[in-house]
Length: 294
Ligand code: URA
Image: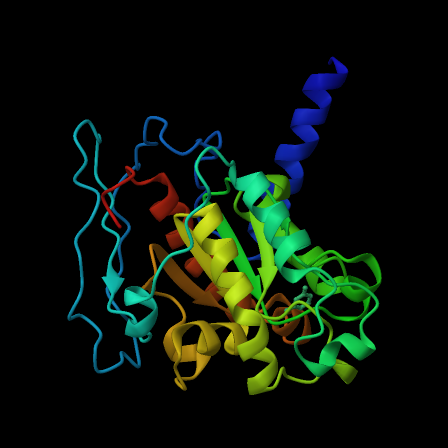
């Protein structure tokens, strides 16, 4: 067996072990990451599930059957709920200067706009600003709460234990290299003792995240955990009700799911299965023809 074949076999084995661990009963197709504007990846078949328990009052109103794209062999159904944050649907979008690439837009935001930010009190305790990292043209973005000690130390999001779990979920679970997605947080500086960010800290920082989303223009944003989901959706609903379905969010689909740190704390077969179910839907939406679910 050549080294390359052995490497591939090892990767497949690792992925299968991980999938078994999270209770996966079928393996999703691993598609090559598509660039924006390229030919759509065809969905394999409908695995749609309607809104489950705890549906909000608006649930179902904006349900949009999706993915009837020409040429799709068997179109996936991606159900999208109305957003809990209508003001963010109407809000202005940040538009890149003509000719600027998403990478340049992000860099300008990081250096020129955020700079050595002192807009809220968190600057006093931070080591580094954790701007975000990944592919500036990612079709999939993850948003967490805020940096912890490891992230503050390295200036990168999700590099501690929760980050390792997230990487495992993305790479072994979803079959996507971490470098292909973009990862950021609601706030960019570590709160003391990892407490929840306060309203004024969010108000000072969230605009930067919105700009990142507008620049990257992912198809799907995954909100990790209660805090990120409730903040992005302007909702007080529990994560158990928000998760598992797509919400319209600006120009993307937003899927709330459990935070990897919660998963680490309560590593039960049920919680692993739940996250896996949510991320299967995300994969399905990513694989559905572009334009059919947005
Ligand atoms: N938890 C988060 O929400 N974000 C990080 O970057 C790390 C841990």
